[in-house]
Length: 55
Picture 1: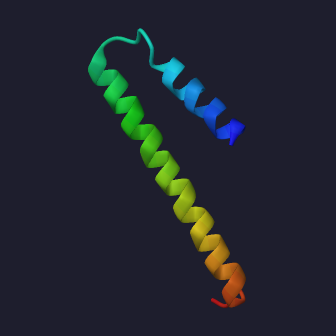
Picture 2: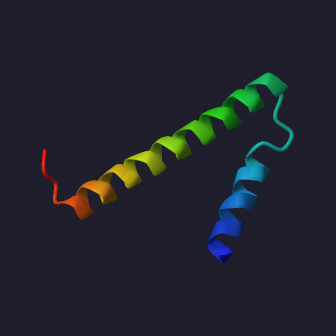
């Protein structure tokens, strides 16, 4: 749990005093998009691993 809190603090500190604000929103959106893609790739790998890697 401490690691997640550390990542959260790094994420929030990265955007402190950052201007212009639309760039901050764009970067935050991109970070969320990348996280979604990583979770989808992990899910797809685990699904394939548990179903036998049949194509």
